[in-house]
Length: 373
Image (tube, rainbow, N blue to C red; front, top):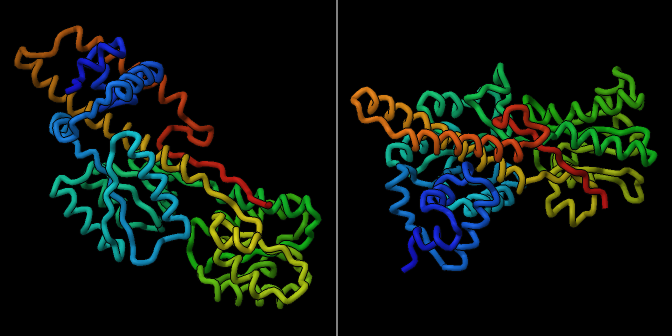
């Protein structure tokens, strides 16, 4: 049976380094990780997951809720990307059912009491989201997919998030339409309070105003709204065309509304409709859309979770070390030197993985791309 010592000998590193690669890869240099990974593959070594969980006091499990109806058309793709990224770090993804945000909080409580999970990924964030303060109060590790709309400090270090820059995506799409000769560009968005919807509306508004394609007093007449359903998109499109029959392009906040708008257009109508999310509907109807970088979103979510868990464990170890030192049983100088080196490596590795859209590594805004073929 292959042991961790066999892997260490083959890779030319210490057993502790192999252990770090398996349990805390962020603190190991990429070149060293590559050597260890190659040795593991060559020898066919399989870590004992149960033993590792006992040793690290982690379940190595991320939990994410599922609703009876998907929060968005991209949820399945996000989930697949998250499981793929987690699997690369030997982490499991657990699904739990949720029918409302209060129901999800009850699920949090049950999972925490059972010691089943290390962290949570929250989707479908909203203004005054009750899940966020609950998780903070209970000192739980979590990451949002989507910004915490309504919080006074969007960059609160207690509330890490990964989001896609919808404002930029819609601005890029609107700019593309202008450059291709569209002169009267309308907008179909969601009604009511929606941080995401408003953010995308700003991308349309700012681009039109900057290009002098509309006056501020014209904007309201160029907009219509509907819930995220195909029928509502049809109604909103007809409303918009009644308001402004001269519209020659419509930017929609989602592919669902864009699909409805496409269905509502009169035959032989030369109006370009665009969407957001690059769903099967956009691909089937072949309208321009905005694609979200879900693989990179999942990578950033898992990275933040691992870093926060490492920081939590490091703080606990420091507390334990301080208590041991008070009793005359503190660790050796050699151990401290090793820890210092590992922390330096973690900083260097983390720095290379940051994106330009993140100023602190805890709040990541990723650029989308427009799909116009």
